[in-house]
Length: 266
Image (cartoon, rainbow, N blue to C red; front, side, top):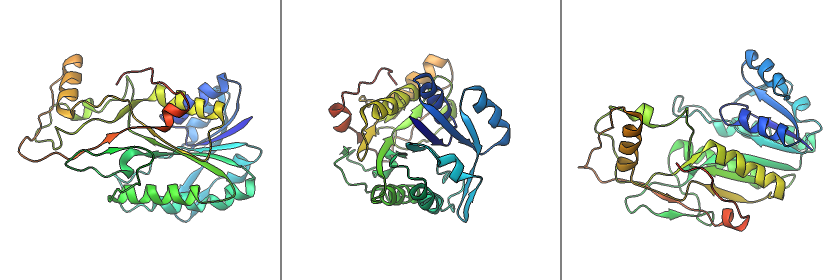
C-alpha cells in the first residue's frame, strides 16, 4: 500500500519513518529543498511542494499518483500570519486529489475547533465545532470541504497540543508573568501517541470518521506547568489569578470504539 504524506515536518517525518518500517510505500513532501535528501535517506520518495492561496508549486500530480491514501499534515501558520487563507490552500488541492483517484484521506486538524469557555465544557466527537477564532473557522471550513466531498472518505484527527521530549510549551512559558487561563485544563498529546493512533487508523481502515485526541488527564495549566518547570529546573510561569479562566476538556468516544490506548503520559 502506498501513502502520500503532505507535510513531512515535526510530526509527518517520524510518522513516515514509522510507516516505512511497517512496510508501507511512502511519498513525502517538504517545503525546503535541503530536506529532500533526508527524506530519501529514510526510504521516502521526496517531493518539493509548496501550497499557496493561488495554487501549488511543485509536481503534486506525481506526488499523489499511485497512492491509496493521502495524509495532510500542514500547520495553518495563522498565529504568525493571521491574514493567511489556509482554507484556500487546502481547497485548492481537492481537484488534484479527485484527479489522482485517491479514495482515502486523513486530515490533521486541532481541538481549537472547539471554543474555550468559563465553565470548561467537555467536548467529544459528537460535539459540533463552535470555535470563533480565525484559525478555528478556517480549520472547520477545511474539515467540511474534505468530509463533504463524495469522491474520497476523510478521517479528521483533532489533536490537542502536541508535545515531545524535545518540544514542550514550558520552554516558552518559563519565566513569563500574568499568563491568563491558569485554572483551565490542559489538553495535550505526545507525538508518539499521535503516530500510534494514525498507524491504528490505517491498520483498521477507519476512514470517514472523526477522532478527538488528547491524553485523558486534564490538570490545571498552572499546576501542570509549574510541575514541568520544576522537573526541568527552570523558572515556573506566573498566572493572572484575577481574571476568570476559559478552557475546555477534550474527550473521545471514538478512540474507545477502535480500542486505542494512550501509552505516553503528558
